[in-house]
Amino acid sequence: MAALPTPKRIIELVVIFVIVAVASGIGSRATIPNIPVWYEGLAKPSFNPPNWIFGPVWTALYLLMTYSAWRVLGHEMTKKLKAAAIVIFLIQLTLNMLWSVVFFGMHDPATAFIVVIGMEVSIIAMILIFARIDPLAAALQIPYAFWVAFASILNLMVMLLNPVSGA
Image: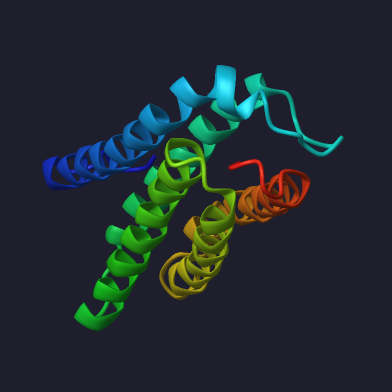
């Protein structure tokens, strides 16, 4: 039977959850009001998923992100490796939030495409760093990397299909 988490580990989980929830909340505040008019008015590729799929997918990805980071922080490691894991986690999370603000909030798919590419690179870097500490935590981030790669393609297609429309 696995041991129950210590109070310190529970506090770490809550802190990580709150950080991820705040980033998610900021992204949602930029996204949700812009879906009905601006986003619906854009030309999108035929393989664009229905809007209802994004909420459940992102919720699952944010929960996996939280759990993975918590698992990583539970391991003994050098200060340098721990700092690298925390920094890359925060970089990818910041880019995640920024993408929503730029794409939806600023209606700027071109700049958002640059952000989403940076986000994908940072997610891959996070997976590689997490793999050195906790292979399961790294593996749990693979769906996130694939989803963001798909989101990058969608972003590019929206950019190409809406060239000068102020999209």
